[in-house]
Length: 304
Image (cartoon, rainbow, N blue to C red; front, side, top):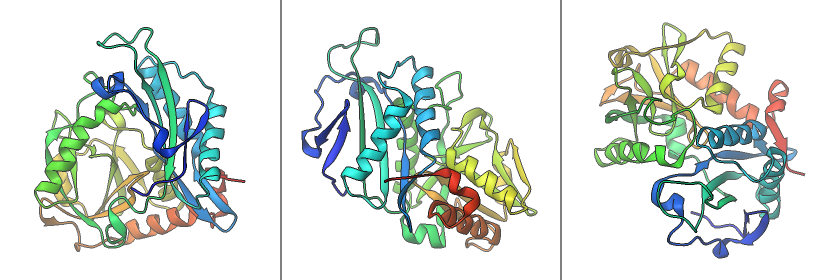
C-alpha cells in the first residue's frame, strides 16, 4: 500500500500514522461497521471522483440496514471525500470511507457504542493488475456460497459480510486462480468475491438479479453503457451450469473496474480472451470516468 499524508478522521484531517484505534474497538471484534469504495480518476480537468454522491448514499443505506446512525450528513461526507483527495494532492486513487463502532463497549449489544467515521485515500492501480484488465483473468466456482439476505444483508456493505469474500478469494488464489464466482444456496450465480458478474450469450448481456448480491454502482453504470451501445441487457437468475455456455464474461466493481474473465474452472470462455462486447463496454467505461464522454459527465465530481 502506498501511504498518503492525511486521513479524515472524525471531522479532522489527521496524519496517516496517527490514525490508530484501540485493541478493544468493537468493529474489529464483531465486524460491525459499514464502508464504501470509491475511485477518483485523472482527467483533463483534474481529479474527478466517480459517482461520489451515490456511493455516499449507499454508505448511509448500509448504515441504516445495520442500525448505525452516522453523526454527519451526506453532504459533509461528500465534502470530506473531496478534501481527502485535494489535501493529499492525488490525481487519481481509491477512497475508503469507513463507519465503525469504536472503543468503549464489548459484547453484541451496540446501544451506546461510540460511532467513528474515517475516510482515507491512496494511489491504487488496477485491483487485478493491468494484465488482468487487458487480457482477462481465470476464476473458479467457489466451494463457499454467498449467504442469502435472510442470513446477512448482502445488499449492504457491512464489514462482517466480507469474511465470506475473504475465504472465497483466498481459496481461489491458493488453487491457482485470480478470483472466484460464488453461488447462492440454490446453486445459481450470486457474484464474485467482491465484484458483480456479467456474461454474454447470443449477444445478450446477462447479469444475476440482485437477490443475493450487492447492487453495485459500477454494475449499474455498465448496464446503462450497454443499453446506450445497443446491447440488450437481461437481469435474471443464472444457473451455475449456464456459466460454461457463456461466450464472454467479466466482473465489475469499484476496485476491479471492468475485468474480463477468460476461463472458469480451467475451461475457456469463448475464445479464451476478452470478447468484443466486453471490450466495447470497457472502452466506453474508461472514456466516461476520464471525462471524455459528455453523456456521462454527470457521473463525475471534479476536485477543485
